[in-house]
Image 1 (cartoon, one colour):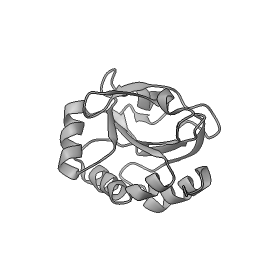
Image 2 (cartoon, rainbow, N blue to C red):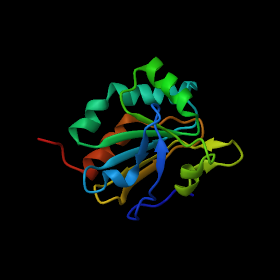
Image 3 (cartoon, one colour):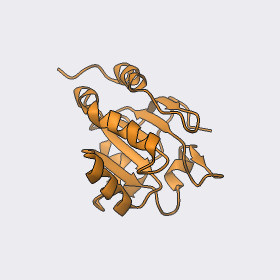
Image 4 (cartoon, rainbow, N blue to C red):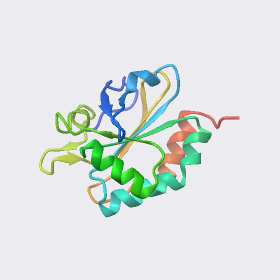
Length: 157
């Protein structure tokens, strides 16, 4: 079961598509974070979802929220995925130990070997303020992000 709102988000450190290590704790006191778990790079639904986020990146920037995608893919696969689709945000490899961060957030699907589609909006203090999970095969809607971001932090001026 996915983690609930109003609890401290578990910290983690994972490599991004360039091999740089990203820690959630590094954003505490700096800016809120949108963690977007997705099953697999290059799959049709995941590609469409992340392209929608790419095309609406201003939504995150206007709210001063760091957008971070996470999947069980390797960093090499995520780099190719980001380059192919033009993603200008971090994609983190929850590759090894396999799905460990997704498990901590309660969104790893053991029977499939990857994370469910789940989003966690984490405030500047590292507390989960909003989360939404869709059924397998069901894409998330940009409107859900907009509503969660509006509730999390007012628009930057």
